[in-house]
Image (cartoon, rainbow, N blue to C red; front, side):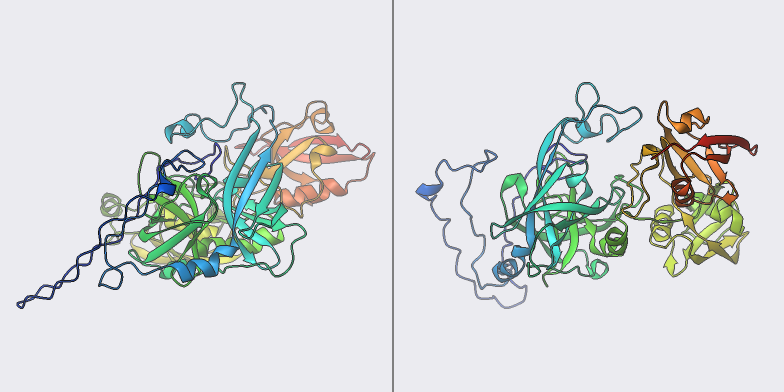
Length: 504
């Protein structure tokens, strides 16, 4: 990721943008020749020996075309002036944290692979860090968007505006799977400069774009380029759908806006490829817009879930299944008791659409379902034995997968570990709540609970989600004994456990 501190993403070199030469038209008659370009200006004495704070040498600009001739670069100055006030610097600080059993950040070796230092200390803990990133204001009251990896693990966040004002900020919500975070400035007035999110779906490959950010601590730096590609999967997460651009994105640009020529934000600059030039990636604005309501309301993003294992429909699979279709997602497996299995989906079904979303690959299915609300009803169109079939599915809530961070919602009840020594999460089997961790010496440990157990009933109440379990356990009266029905993953046998609720 493009931060100036060690991070979970990539590092890259700078990109030099050069205006295009004007090309003469071809024809039978000889066209008049434009005036030759002026010679490059001599280096200003003031620039001799000048370097950036990062130690890079400052070179004078060289124009490759005469302004006003066909193909000459048009000035972006009016656009820059109108939006740069909403682009902010995000400064974060965090204290050193000791290693925690089973907790991981980046997979081993991933940071080094992209030319970055490991984010862990020698003993496996998280070292103290101070970093810089970028962001942009989307509401005049002080709501700011940035990358999750910019603020993840931060103890303090401070946001500086282009006009010199600075505010402490709190993290309203964040989503690690799409690398999006929402901040609120403390004590900010209600008339801050702000920019709006545009429609990233109408952006075409080749359209001009502009990035503003804080690379290497150089505030309000502007770069321009084009949209190089769409829907890039860089294997950063299950919902990769990045915009690719050749606009210069460097460490410190993370979280900054990618603008179209209307001054609308069409993407959030997020990642770069180490050792490459002119390859940067941005989270599409439409994906960010879809997550904003949940980030504002609860601080997390809950996603729809079918409970399927799927893979791309290849020409070979299509022939083997006797299908004429060439695109879709093949159901390779189902979670027992999951939403898809309960609705009647089968292995070897080929999913071609979900609701109004066409499905041409396994990744497209994953992204389409993730945009739908848990517990909502959706029509899944499948090919079964070559015949079209419609299946009505009540979506579940996607549980956190192994190694993924679970973010606590703002509206969650008090953390159960403070009272019972118990941490719970969504079940990967589609029902109940899963015990994620048990504190040594706690009431939960004394009651015989262990990580991995599925909590299916508390007293007389059936448990269908982690929220159900949290609600009933939090309301339990002190001094009482709770009867729990639990089972181990993959087992149908139910075990009884009892927990004595201690005083708060």
